Length: 474
Image (tube, rainbow, N blue to C red):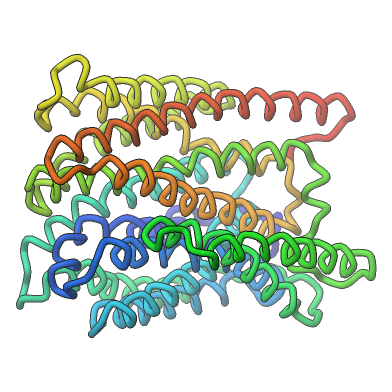
């Protein structure tokens, strides 16, 4: 099937694609509930555990642009199959890890292979689905990502407490093996290859510069607090500036010479796409970081089991599903407004619980806020990608998807770094410190959601300007 051709089938291929999206999102969150067991088994500190959590997102964010461009150049089905197979192998290595260093390395590999897998999903949904089904397809995709995030908490908690054969936390990674063994053959049979861009020499130097730039920014953000912000962290920040400048110069030079850059900066000529990047990346600073803080509060602060911690996420997961279904029916840009308003209300309820209930509030006091938050996230995330990618040319769908997902993962890593400062800085050795730390995280997420409202107005302005000059939605 060529690009732009309406797919004669819908549910079979989209089910395979959504399974990939679900698994990638699942592994971004499932390790959270295994934190106490990991810490105990490896007898290590919080810094190492935090690195295990974010290593996946770090490698994922650094590799997504490359993964998207690989699909454009060498075929999206081929890269989807290679990415899913590699992701399954990396999950096996995570489950067998004998040491924290080995687990961090395996998580990095898991993130890289996930970055090869994921952009192909967005690109194939964008170019292969008939226009009248595209909005519904992206709604299902957003649902798969959100449900993967919530299922990561519930399923992870159940697996850790089940402790089958004494595997404990290792089960949260090994659960991917049967999924991969089913999904890879199914994808080979059910997916069609897309048209490839003109075969050119791949931009290896650009890939290296992009990885070094993001690594120089994110690594000190993740490790700096635990290390006490030594000189190397500031040196790393400083080095990221010339590295980023060199990357931009190289990519622009390749475009001028008619060669295929890793990132086509023509994408950034569209103000709507740039505004969408800022909005999406900012919003994602609150997702995994908030879930991590809630998990730490439950297990380390309040002494809940892994499964009990997963159950705390159930109100959020159920209302997220309701929000997703409502977004599918409502559709359109205004659903984003509604989603952000509910998100603000949810975070507001969560950070004010101590003032309403008292300083020793119980877990059940969080249920109303979590339920409202889940509804808001479902309403917002579901239509977000379709709104942002609406005016992206189909030929650059892979690159655009990679850049967009990189912004989300970079935002997620930045959020974990900020939340680490807020949460661990509030700990005082007692349960009250965990509660205060969680309230600080909810306050931060509330403020970020306010910023997202401003960025959403900017996105509207960009769309209106594009419409005034006759730029039609793709």
